[in-house]
Image (cartoon, rainbow, N blue to C red; front, side, top):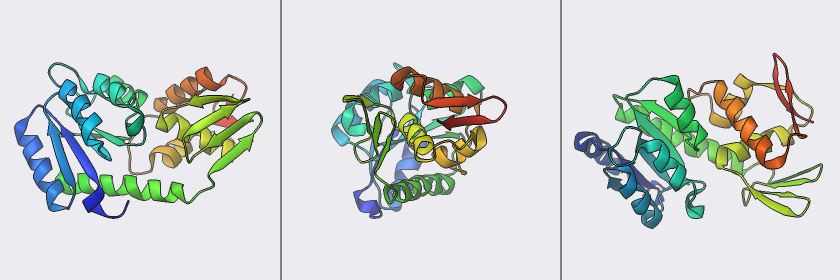
Length: 227
């Protein structure tokens, strides 16, 4: 989506100063902006506003960002919305939890507006490249359709969260090639997003739970491959 006038951003944070700064900078860049000060209001606003990007604080009153992200990802119209977590917390479990519920990026405070704008643009650039790729991958008894973000397994439709889908799609598109965790992180999350290698393991486990154990093989000490 190249026209910023059409790109809608929802800013969710309980600190009014942060909301004001982000809203000002986003509107200056031409984005349409809505705001919410807690997780419960964020879910309601997101369902009506249908943002393309959500900037979501982790530590908030009433409902934290992780639970909020989980609920937003359950809204079908928002399955492809980019969610960027904003947080002052540096603990590993916070980052793993964020990506586990479907975050696309993770930025620590204090937030530099220009760097944030660059991260948002990078997300759309990566998405544009992916849209030019092959739409369907048919392998074994799976039809993996990137147009609808669905998987058909022997006539049964399976829906995966965005990052789990991208991971499966990438591996299936490159069968019998072993990819390290770092290679998967670069191809799925992007080189400009800092993500722990453990995040790949969590996503692989979840994909296996949904499509079965027989597709993705662990190559000990190296990485993963689609057989």
